[in-house]
Length: 332
Image 1: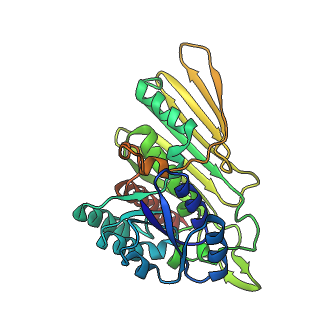
Image 2 (image 1 turned 135 degrees about the vertical axis):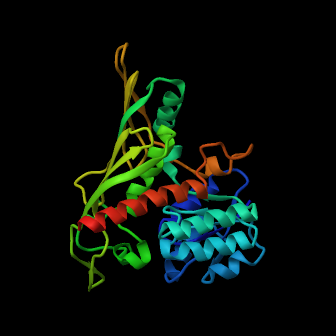
């Protein structure tokens, strides 16, 4: 399968993932402004073409699929063009800036009969896949409560490498779009349930940010605390911070028959899985580093498995994200 990758930020990681999948090539890397970075990445991975016009590449007939790894405000334009061209469309998270855009993309993918996926790479994490297996096997029984947290420090200083992340127009939201959307997707997947946001609060750590000598006003949140409930009344909490003093992802599920806690390193996917069955001795399993290559799920030789995250999954996570944003702005 011949891919084009749009975006030279996290797009570099996506190229590495793609080239690790048998039968996949990356034919073009498309950039929006940084030609020198695009050229460096292309040289590193031996990508044959560096292009400044993503839409032209998408419509060229030279590729079978496109991976869009750009700010959310650009996703709908590029992904719609990919679906129009009959290409498999892959979007970095979040799927879009808001639910309206995400729903349009989902409907259009379904109408065109063209696959659309979102790179929720934590679904490829071995420890979390084991949590999913345990839940489906009945280890937990009925889920009573869920709690997720994602701490990171990538914006822990006033200087920002990504000015677009601090504007609502480009990003849609802050840590809610950067990190919470991952956890909202994990909540849905690991509980096999649908959820509603009941309350949310957020904070901005730095009212003013700096970038290359310029000052900008920070419009998006750096910390967020979201409370949810399922249709059956099960409570859940999702907390995220992009200004923490450490890096860690935690996923905790409590059930009538047992509890599980995954404590993971966001840098390499390694971590510990704590298992506490109600009627047996608790134990801890260690999981080594894993690159969490989501494309191995999306492009599996015998077809994507049921847990491969589609545009529909992206749209549902986006809906919860938007609900949380509305709550935070009511209480701001």
